[in-house]
Figure 1 (cartoon, helix red, strand yellow):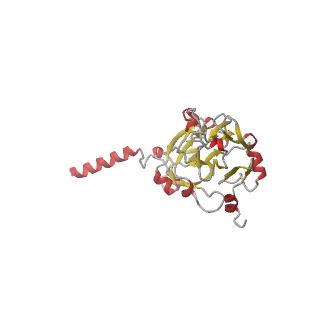
Figure 2: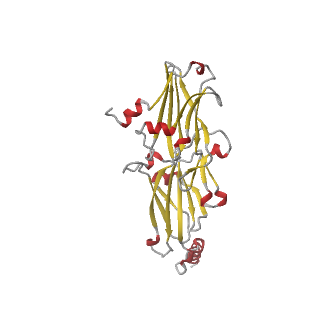
Figure 3: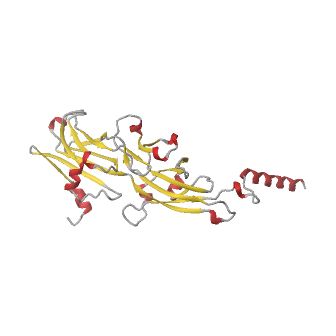
Length: 301
C-alpha cells in the first residue's frame, strides 16, 4: 500500500512539473519544427554541403524578437530545427547560416527592423578582410493551440538563400618593387556594403576591405579569396591594387564595368564566384576572367 501511494504521488508531481494536465490544456504547448533546405541554383538538396552552423531568431506578430539561439550541431546535421516552446499565435522565423565570425547587432532592441548582421571585426571597428559564406532563410509560422493530439504539431520547410558573393582575385607578374620581402602590394575591395538586414538586403555605409593575400614567388602570382555581402550597387565598388596600404594605386578595377564586360558571371544566382585576373606584362595591365573559370563554366571552350 505504501509503495502504491508513493507511485501515485510521484505521478502527480510529474504532471505538475510539466504544467500540462489533461483536464486543463491552457498550459500545454504544441511541438513545432523546421526542415532546413538549400538547393542553390538547382533542384538537388545541398544544405549539408554548404551550411554547417545556424542561428535562429523568432519574432512575434509585433516583430519583436522573443527568442534567439544557435541550433545544436545534431539538428543542423539532421536538417531539422526544433522551435522553442511558443504560445499559440503568428510568428516570423529568421535563420542565418555559417555565422562563424559574424555578429548580429540590435538584438538588445528586440526590433526586427533594427537588426543587422556583419563581420565581427566591423562591429568591433577593426579592419575587415571579408565575410563568412553567409546564408539566410525566413518563413512565417503559425503555432496552433495544443489540442491533445498530434494535429497541433507541425513541421514546415524553410528555404535558405545566399547572402554573399564569393570573390577571387589573382595578380600575375607582380611589379618588381612589390616583390621585396615585407613590401608586397596590397589588395583591397573598396565601397562594399558591410552589413545585411533581416530582409537579406545588403546595407551600411560603404566600407573598404583589406584582403588577406598569398604570394607564389615562382609564379610571381599574388592571390586572394574572400566573401562580400550581396550589394546591388556595383558602380561604386572597386578592386584596388596598391604598392602599400593607403599607397599609390598600381591598378584599379571597377566591379560594374568588369561584370558588364564579362556576362559569363551571373550575379543573380545564389552561388556566385566573381573571379578577377590582373596581369602586368610588357608594361601593360590587362584585366580578365581567369582561364580556369571559363573552362569550369563552359568546358567545351
